[in-house]
Length: 405
Picture 1 (cartoon, rainbow, N blue to C red):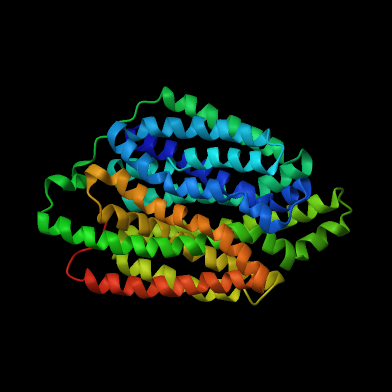
Picture 2: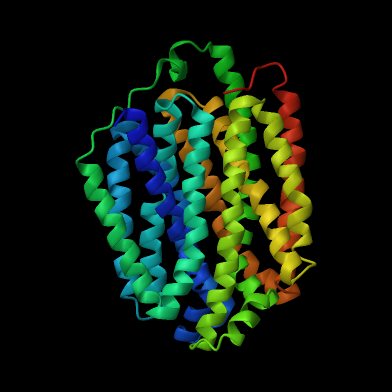
């Protein structure tokens, strides 16, 4: 197997697991609410430390990866997440669940700086590679709600974490015995050729990108933590179909129906990721970034108004564009950060996207209590509208440089 294929294979498995862990919890929010005898808003708050560490851990792990190697960090990712999953399965209270989820968040934060660093420096067709890697993450998003709902229906939420933890540890062991060359490809070793003027300019553009990505993270997190429960409340057509089949475990079956719809919605994001990867390798990255975010805006707002079939269609189109822009965004981060601290650059991105956005679990609870779950999508729409304006400024500010992969 070539070095590029090994990089893509390992990072794709890791990206799958990273997002699988991310969405197991919200998919099980209602079963956990019943098990712990807590309000839904209080259950969602238990994930605060997980999402916080998932974000703020990205920067130190990015620096560690640049210093000691991305492969070594990825080994720690697989093994650490597996241990965290086992601890979560053994949790017996809200406090212990919160702390064990925090362990998962801390080790899950390794993937994005280390994995993206490997791809951005070691794979020739960077945009498409990031798109393929994004598809793997989307498969994690797609499968997590349904797999969690199915396993909860069959054996309970604890076994879900046991199985995914074992899978993580197996891949960690595989990577221990897999050699990867982490030397940058000549065309991506920009530290040797870029002038000081160019470096100063791209640093300014990177700062603008950081503002954009922080706002995008708020919108992304709001949808990801609300969607399964929102579908359970507002899209009952699949649940009605299941009722006519006389399936047992009525509440579990209702959750299963909602998580199946959530998985179907995230499935559309796979097509979006491939489209975004192709666009990243073909067109100006900045204009594609603007296009994908702008096209997502009407659909996220529409989600606050509609229900049943229309809600599912609107959510699918929003996910297509909001996830499809990720290969473009990650290519822009690579464009505006030097090779020698590429993983640190991605660490900065994900501390903003996931760390700052962790406060959304509290913001969502506050919005829900005041105006209902529908209002969450009006908030998300406002965030997208703001970042579209800032992208326009980025295009104007960087108009004198080429921005293609």
